[in-house]
Length: 156
Length: 156
Image (cartoon, rainbow over all chains, first blue to last red; front, side):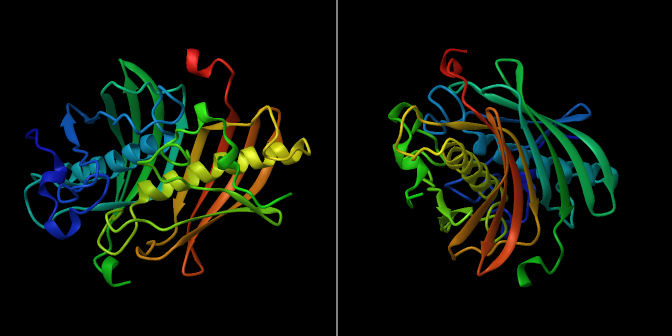
């Protein structure tokens, strides 16, 4: 499996996500890669992504977990079919359910590392567990149930 | 109970939150009010807060639930002590745990209404259930476990 970010291969019409779309110039443009059997993404919050002064806003942490969860789900779906991430048709997931536990305050001003474990791939559903670390210490963890976008999603 | 937003009375040093701080010029500045026995907040996503084209980014929805949860927790804490929200010492909560279920795609371009129910007030912990509606239809629901900020939070 080559080390490419799955979001770099989302088709243009599903690459607008504020969290991870490469075509959203205002967004976070999170990128999810394989790292061994885990997935990894990195993000450095802006100074204004604050909760209480000195610490990262919990909503941003939830957003990053959400996006790395759907990105990891797409990575897992390709792997499950033994396909490369630049092959077609593309996999694109949305979140059905998100659980985040804030274990300790996340310091602002450093790069955050998100690590994902693929817990289950079943039909159109992928479950991942994500940790968020700052300075090598896990500050939050989450669980994301992602589902492959229905083909009629944009027409609902 | 007067209809004032609890966030308008957060002390300056805890009013910087990207989600709900009135002093964060880059943030959402969400405001939580009482509405009968429920709490309410309103937010209109920007055009770039997109997930898939036409629908709101799930990370933003999680953020709004998170922030309305902590705002609702503060409202509940004042009510629990039969104090007005401009009285001191101020209550300020952070999130310990956040659960979000995305029930259906949330359309972009309309005002979202967040409604909160106070499920439990116990010591420094408040549990709320939040719904997100667009065009009068609930599209997501969440549960927030909020805890009052420890006095030494910023010194940890």
